[in-house]
Length: 319
Image 1 (tube, rainbow, N blue to C red):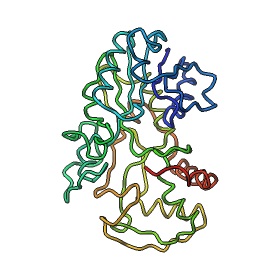
Image 2 (image 1 turned 90 degrees about the vertical axis):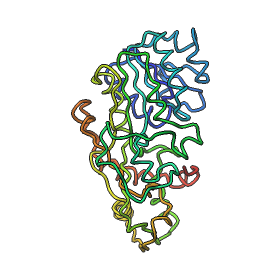
Image 3 (image 1 turned 135 degrees about the vertical axis):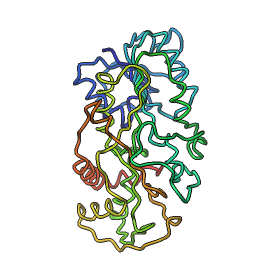
Image 4 (image 1 turned 45 degrees about the vertical axis):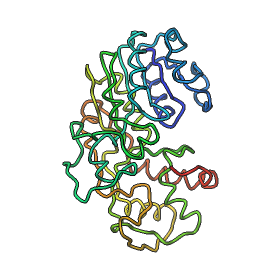
């Protein structure tokens, strides 16, 4: 198929495009042009702001896509979804694949994700299935940035098949603020910091996902997602708690921590959630058939890559 990829030059796009090409798709990248990775230079590129690219009779429509992949770079909103839906209808694209987020679930707000005030007691069964209760409105932190995945999901239309992928906390070997959470630990080693604060004993679990798994899910969704609007969690099949991840970093980098247990409210690491966040990945495995890569291999590779690139990673602003 001819696939229009909106925002395809970030970590998710760079992970997905090789799998799309391997499946035989013709990929057109539509983005601002601010970032253009060398490995994607041979593809067809459309440059411009989102509204101009998707305008009636604009560059994206002239590209005549049969399917659209949208990472919603810069934040999700109902308005972006409406513009995308109208574009898909005009262009005659039969499929839409969007990357939403695990943060749509009420449980994530209860756990304190995106600066939401956490609840003392979680109310949702784990692991989080795709029909689990969602947030009633935008998250506190996400809403301030114009980021509302719930409203975006609800506003999608315009195609026979709409796959809504909900990734966990993405990690990837790219110098990009959104995917360098593991630098929190590797950076401490690089700076010689042995003290490791462990909020609630380091038991936090915020389900992560390798960017390569997200890329595989995007390619698989074009082939296997059912008709209609269909949501799918995208996360690694198993994961480590914060303490376990710290232990793996120490093992890979021959380091020894000096753990210090602190109150949950005093923690500042990227996975410091009040309640464990675990996604049900049955649909990812059983419907989309995505079972790779191995999470231990990708996490270890991320740690090693960050250590190799530690000088450059230190300059990436934290998110």
